[in-house]
Length: 185
Image 1 (cartoon, rainbow, N blue to C red):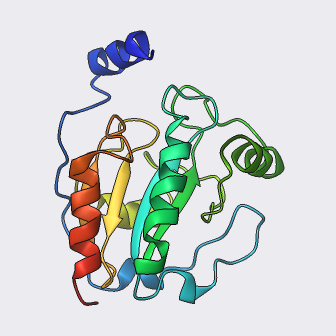
Image 2: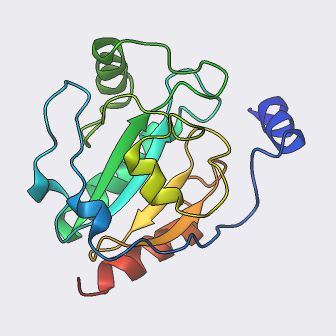
Image 3: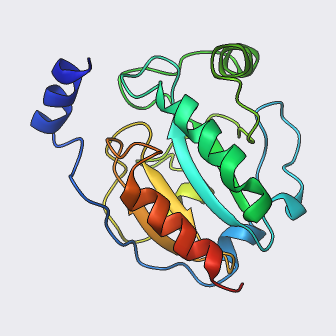
């Protein structure tokens, strides 16, 4: 269904076929960072503390937007095991997230039933890269497109990074999440 978009992304270097490691941030650093939710309120610190977190830069008008459905299913399956999925709206790739916080929240809730936390819109690359993405990316390559995924362990260190084309139900992503969930914090 998204073949032309996928081919375009591949031509632009927007995807790779397997996950990559990202230099680990100091343990606990990401969990300790103050984060602001889409509604402008602080994300409570206990939301992430001691949890495995899957950070995903998201957009409402992207060829990968349907991944919201799989992300919500993944969240429902593993939240009681200690997984938190955090969506981070980003408008840096083709202007695919131009909406207001209210329109983003409404779209996610009504279209995909999203209940996982959504943060305020952020830049993931360039001189305006948010503090969160500075920590997630570390010394690694820039984020290539929307729906790139970072797994952060219970200790707050980045454990794995997956390209946009990795579906939430992929065996590779699920195995990495399950491995992170099995580790003590």
